Image (cartoon, rainbow, N blue to C red):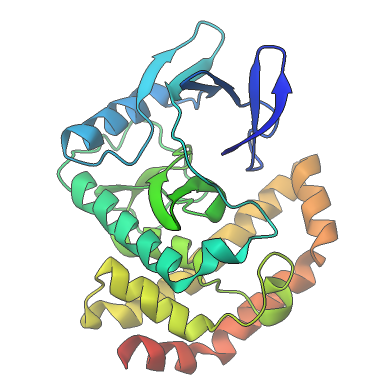
Length: 271
C-alpha cells in the first residue's frame, strides 16, 4: 500500500477494498486489522523468510485489540486507474518471477490444512502450497520499475501453483474484455502476448500451459461468486463498485470474451 493522508495516530495507507481506512504506518511498522488466522499466517511468513523469500512483510506482533503489526516495505504501489509504469513488459515479467520465487520457497513449507485459511478465493481443487490468491497491482510493491515484494496475504490459502498464477493473470494481463479493461487499464495492451510473458517469466512448462487457460476461466467464476456474496450481504463497497463498473453485464461480457479469445491465448502460450 502507498502512503495517503496523515492521521493523528499514524500515516494512513490507501489501496485495497477489504481494509480501506483501517491500515496505518507508524515509522517502520504497518498496523492493520489481523485476519482470524493471523498466528498461522505469521508463522508461514516467517518460514518463507527462513527459506530465502525476503519479499514479504515480516510479522512483528498481534495487539490486544485485534490488530497486527508487520514491517513496512518501501516502494511504489500502483492504484487504479493503473499507470503505464506498472504495466510495462518489464514490470509484468518481474511479477511472474516474483511469484515463482514465492512458490519455490513455499513448496518447502508444510501447510496446516486445519489452520482456518480463508476459502472465498481459494483454489477449489485444493493443494499443498500456500497460495497468495490476490496478486493484484495494489498488493505488489515496485522499485525501479520491477516487482520487489508482495503484501496483504489475507486471502492466502492452500492450492495449486497454477491457481495462483491464474489469479495473478486476471489482474496483470489483464484477462478482461477491452471495454472492461478500459476502466482501470491504459489502452493498447496485447493480452495474449502479455499472458505469454507472464507464463515465460514464471517458468511455466509448455505441457502445463493449456491447463492455465482452464484455471483462468475457473478463477474468473470464483471471483464473480466472491463479488456476488458481498453484494448479497449488502456490502456498500462492493455494491458501489458493481454499480459503477457495469453491473453483472460486465461479468457476462468478460466470460463471453474469455471463451471467444481462447484460441488466440492458446496460440500465444504455445508459440
